[in-house]
Amino acid sequence: MRRQGGAWTLQSVLHRKGLGPVAGVDEAGRGACAGPLVVAACVLRAADAEALAGLTDSKLLTAARRQYYYDLIVARAVARSVVVIPPAEVDEFGVHVANVEGMRRAVAGLAVHPGYVLTDGFPVPGLTAPNMAVIDGDRVAACVSAASVLAKVTRDRIMVDLHAGMPRYGFDEHKGYCTAEHNASLLAHGPCAEHRFSFVNVVQAARARGLPVPSRRRASLLPAGPEWRAADYATARAGGASTR
Image (tube, rainbow, N blue to C red):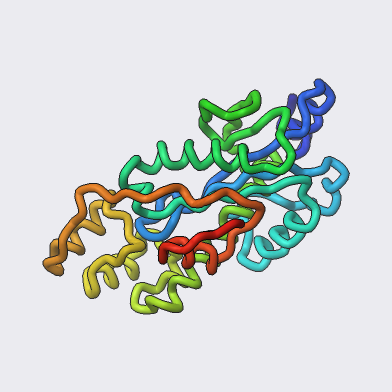
């Protein structure tokens, strides 16, 4: 297989070998010090290659283009699943363990069980289908790019929604990543429940404000489903139930 064959090459080859449908998996928020980790899985139709031309890693797209592709993916995907992992879960188990478990749940949550799974960059044990890690998968495999867009747009919406209730942190701008502005607001106000205490800057800000630093925070992975909204996250974080 040659990379220059395009972002649909892997999927096409696997289908020809009888290993379809092919799901892509990716996450958003791995490096953020606030907000959830969001993992998505997606199965695309090969017939949609033209409609999704230009689809790539969500980080390489503008916000407007991410939204454009998000709407197309939601309308055209064979199956999609999104898992939202709260900060406490990331703190307790570590970002990599939480990420891997989120990928398992996202794949298991697909309405159509995949014949093969492509993951971005590293292998994921325990998936319910044969799988392969693809270097730069979110740039070279369309289904992984689609998962990247689903995860990124979902997480950005959650962070914007959190900003409405806690504007002092500027979540709508930096989306919980460790920018200079975010660090300044952390030092000025101290961390909130949406911050990850597994990050040194969050611990330092809490101590500077004389706030307690939890040694261990426990939560449950939020339910997998076809689409998560900020309202679902807010409901679950408040202790309510969500069936999405």
